[in-house]
Amino acid sequence: MRSGRAPFASFAGRILHSACAVQRRLVRQALGFGLVWGLVWGLSASGGIALAHGDTVNVYSLRQLHLLQPVLDAFTAETGTKVRVVYANSGLVERLKREGRSSRADLLISNDFTKLVAIQQAGLTERPSIQASGPHGDAAGSAEQGEAALTQEGTPLTQDGTALTQDGAPLTQDGAALTQDGTALTQDGAALTQEGAALTQDGTALTQEGAALTQDGAALTQDGAALTQDWVALTQRARVIFATTSVAASIEGYADLAEPGKYRVCTRSGLHPYNLALYGFLIEIWGAEEFRKWLTGIKANLGRRPQGNDRDQIRAIAAGICDVSIGNSYYFVRMQQDPAQREFIEGLAVVFPSVASGGTAMNVSGVALLRHARNKQAANALIAYLRGKEAQRFFVSTNFEYPTNPNVSADPALAAIGTPTVGKQGVADYNAISRNQRVAMTIVIETRFDQ
Image 1 (cartoon, rainbow, N blue to C red):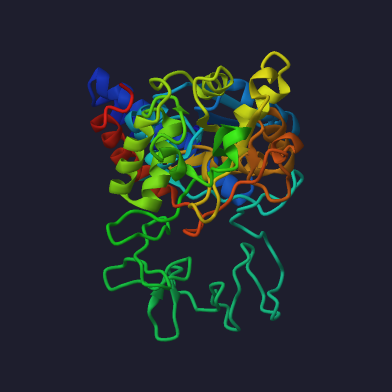
Image 2 (cartoon, helix red, strand yellow):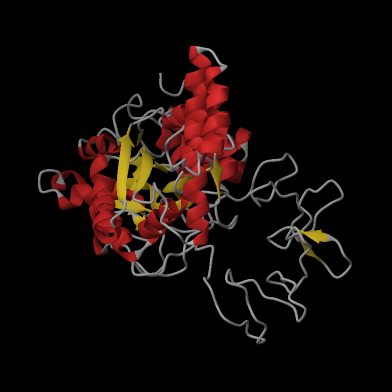
């Protein structure tokens, strides 16, 4: 008996036999990929079978193994979904840019926001869709509320939760009717995006304030830079001031450290990512020229040439080389918890810059869903898990970072040293801060800060 696939097989065979050896290999790969993925997605959409790759999520991680792998193992144990990870200290953003569409990665996990902003600006991410709640606890920042039978007004919903009018036409969340292609219309007939923003004549989405939107719904500034982000923050750490107890009370914020001759300052390299993130924050508050004056003042107050890591600066204060330094909040707690290093923090205080001084600079680790991910359903599930209570408690207790899930508290040892403050400028614009880092790097080099 002839197979039901014979007509297609015959057609494919004619293509293969009419090509050269190299062409035949490429065509086989293309046909195989199309057949497999067409079958998988088609059956999955109809509920016939699960995705062929539904049991594996591929992750590129810039976070260290011991800070992440236990959570991934717990996710696998609970869901049955395997997680394959490529760990690296650097170079993953560049690798994803090279790989492009052919990349096998579903997620990028980064230890700082700069890499996440870079991968989004390269057009390689999309906004994740994670469930609002689940067995892992409330996942803050969720994008979907799930299926419901009726709206509050009693209007019937489709299976995806979209409200229907009396004649069965779908409505957006604000009650606007949808066109046949799913575009929402305002009362005057102007097209809306899925987020409810009006479209201009050229199809560019506008926010309520009239700012242009990108294709992924992120608002644009006048210079075209995105205001929102596709990536999801996982943890936060504060860039704080460590100081001897004798001078800590006189410090209100970062600006005080540059007062001529008032403090001896120790710091790691001005080109280190931790400091560049801080500098980008300061430029956003003060502007580039004011930052240049500040960095020049810090250089004049240095107790020694910039060197080492954040813990080395704490040791330098203990050794009497300097009075103050800048470092990540969790280093202080780590040393406090380590009997071998506890002596170095005796007589030291932690200063969180005040609201009036501009607030505390916060860096974040996060995760981005990649645009060409081949298993987005499982990748979204992993993102939700990483934002859930179990994973957040692990991050909080293991590395003494601040959680991003509002239903999880900071570790008591971290909470005891103080609370970060948000400046008058409000929540940080990480896209702007990332751009500012390039300016900061130039100023660091021009002032010969590290020399």
